[in-house]
Length: 86
Image (cartoon, rainbow, N blue to C red):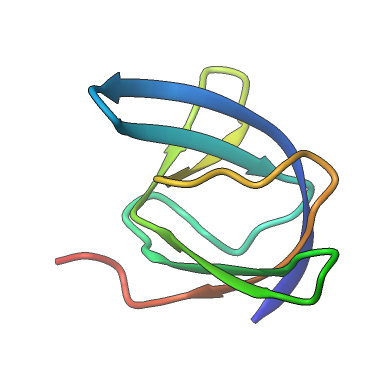
């Protein structure tokens, strides 16, 4: 488990009502092939669990976490990496 902050989000693709987003963090333990979850708490105290379905590193070395629902930049998160996909 690690703590981090969302630094940026990008819409990777959209098909109808479904979207895939990329989120970058100021620190991460995720690497290519990893899956896991990012947890956050809303201002109202609601706990969110955002599945990370993949990890992409761009040409500038930025690690992007592939998610279906993004969190706003500046959101504090706790991350947990599961076993790499096989």
